[in-house]
Amino acid sequence: MDGGSTSETRVPPSVAVDEAVSTKVQIAAQPLYASRIKVHPKSVSGFYRTIKWAVLGFCLSVYYLAPWLRWDRGPNAPDQAILIDMPGRKAYFFMIEIWPQEVYFLTGLLVIAAIVLFLVTSLFGRLWCGYACPQTVWTDLFMLVERWIEGDRNARIKLDAAPNSVSKIAKRTAKHASWLAIAAATGGAWVLYFGDAPTLIGEIFTGRASVTEYFFIGLFTATTYTLAGLAREQVCTYMCPWPRFQSAMLDDQSYVVTYEAWRGEPRGKLAKKAEGADPWAGRGDCVDCNSCVATCPTGIDIRDGQQLECIGCGLCVDACDAVMAKVNRPLGLIRFDTLANQQARACGAPATHKFVRPRTILYASVLAVVGSVMLAALLLRTTVEMNVLRDRNPLFSTLVDGRIRNAYTIHVLNKTHAEQVYTLRAAGVPGAVLTAIGDDTPGDTLRIVAKPDSVANSRIFVTAPLAGLRGDASTKIEFRLDGASGGGRAEYRSVFLAPGR
Ligand code: SF4
Ligand code: SF4
Image (tube, rainbow, N blue to C red; front, side, top):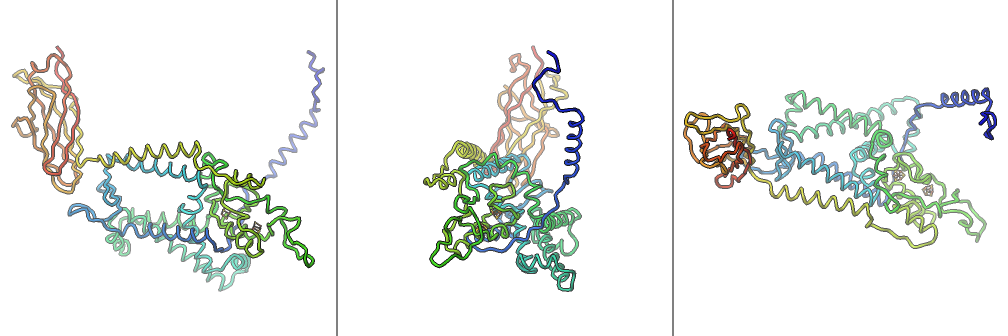
């Protein structure tokens, strides 16, 4: 086919170049970074604000007070209820003690927390973000302090615009000093989870704490001050990955904050009408007062629809309800609802909501399985563990009397707070006798003593007549460990090697 005979409209090369250049110029003119528009959230009261205060009070109390809770574990153990003992390589949570070998409990806990988050998000939207996320809780606290010192939204906007004065500098200094004090308390509380809180607090204030402890206090002070005081909503919008992938958990049956555009629009200021005329005729319920936008901690307008920046805090619901009450219109123009319900309401159909959906069934099932496995593992936890390492060099030794000897290292983990005496036996190898290295007295059993909360390591020989091994190069051997009263028991399977015949 002749290249010039196609029916396509050809763009002359000079025009194409001009367009490319103009597009380039347009792209170049676009700034890569948008300047931050400072948000000055207005205080609000109402149902969701009250819940937010309650959750904030609870979360902060737990965080600051938990290291001070005591839990009696007996004479040889720390009495702090929640403690991550790095030198002792153990974590304590009330009656539960986690050894490094049991780190899978922490993994399981994180998996459970993640699945609970998925389930809650698919049911109720961003409850975590709006109410319990540390970024939200501390930002709310910092904003409260800011409001106490600098006043509410309008006063703060005015203060920002005002030239420097003694009063402005005093307010700003008081605000930042208060924020730093809260941030330092947050960093200080964090390190208390890693040592005995009453001892550590004395050391911190008298300069006797370690460099590591001061480093972490400084780090947490800096991050709390920066994230909750300065960055605020920028963290949720730009830094946090959660809003990006939570959309995979949401569907039209998830509860989110919605604006009832079908009854709010067309919006407009409430104009005075002639006596007897309906002021609401031909218009929507939204009086365009901007209260919902002024209250929003991320500075967005929920009337524009669902947005990534919306953390689902519900403060705009409280703000709008207060306005609706004032203008005598039904509450709930902005409300927690599902998108499916909103669609139904818009058409005048009854609202329907399905809690049980494929995704919620999936999350609940996975949660049930992981939770059951974790619970079973916790309940079946023993007070002793044994690990056996067989010597590989040499694999075995042949003694002058023809018997075969294998060497093993036995690690016994005594998880109790008392010294334990264990009896070790070996089964499966006919005629086997055990000898502790350094003690030449052979016997059917060996005695192993393990100090409280520690690992006892013993090197032993297992010696057996070659004739009893029935020509096998490898014979299964099972080590059994029995503790005296309350010491628990443990088993470990290994092999006993001999020359092949
Ligand atoms: S739009 Fe409403 S729910 Fe969303 S972040 Fe703003 S105030 Fe909170
Ligand atoms: S608070 Fe309610 S009435 Fe006021 S602008 Fe927002 S949606 Fe409209």
